[in-house]
Length: 334
Ligand code: ISE
Image (tube, rainbow, N blue to C red):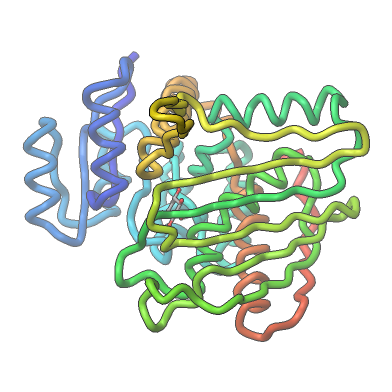
C-alpha cells in the first residue's frame, strides 16, 4: 500500500521531509501540501506531483490524503492536530505538539474521544541508534540506578528570529523528551541559570543557558544549551548510574591523526547528525500509518514535554525553581 501524505508547511523542515517522502521512502508519496507562502508551496507541489491547497484544512480533509505531516510554525500545531483527529487521519507533528499546556490537553482530550492513537510527535532522537544503545544500557540495568544526566546541546548558529525562550522550547525540549524516555521518569521541577552571554550571540539573546531539572525518582538532569557555539553541531549525553555510566557516541565521527595531532570531526548541523534518525522515524511512521496504528512518541509525550518546557521558560524569566505537575495519564498512553 502507498500512503498518500499531506504536508502542512513547506519551509526548511517541511521540504526536508517532502524530499525524504518523495525520493527515499518506499510506501509513501506526497499527495498534497500547504504553506502560507503560496508560491513556495506551489513550486514544491509541482516538483513532486502534488496538489497545493490554499488552506491547511483542505490538505487534512482532502480525500486523497491518508496521513498528515505537520511542519508549520509551532503555534499552529494544535489546531491542525485537532483537525486531523476530527478527520480520523494519523499525523506526525513536528515538535512541539502545542505551545501551551491548555492546547496540549485539548489534543489529549480529542484523541481520547477518538478512542485510539492518531498522533505521533516528531521527537526523532528516539530513533537515533546511539540513543537507542544508551536506553538499552539503562533498561538492562548495566549502570544501576540513574543518578545524574549530563547533556550538551550546541548549535553552530541560529537564525535572527531565535529568542531566549526558544533555547528552551525549541532546543532543550529534545533533552526533556529524551530524558523522560531514557529514564522512564517524569521531570518535576526546573531551574535555569544564565552565565554571561557569548559576544557572538544577537544582543537580545541569553546564550548559553544551563537548565537543571529534577525527576520524580530523584535524578538530576543538567543541559548546557548553547546555540551560537560556532564550531559545529554537538549533542552529548552521559548518564551516571549507581554502578557505571553510559555515554552517547557521535556516529561516524572520524578520528584523524596527522602531523603529531589527533582530531575528531564534528557534524556540521542537525541534518548531518540526525539524518538517519529522521529516516528511521519516517519509515516507522509510514508503516504505522498504513495500518492506522500509530506507535511513536505520543500526544502524552508531547504534552509532558511542553509542560516542562513552559516551566523552563518561567524559570528562565523568573530566576526561580519552577515545579511541574502533570494531569493523570490517560490509560491509552500507559
Ligand atoms: C531545532 O528546531 C531542532 O530541532 C534541532 O534538532 C535542535 O538542535 C535545534 O536547537 C532546534 O532549534
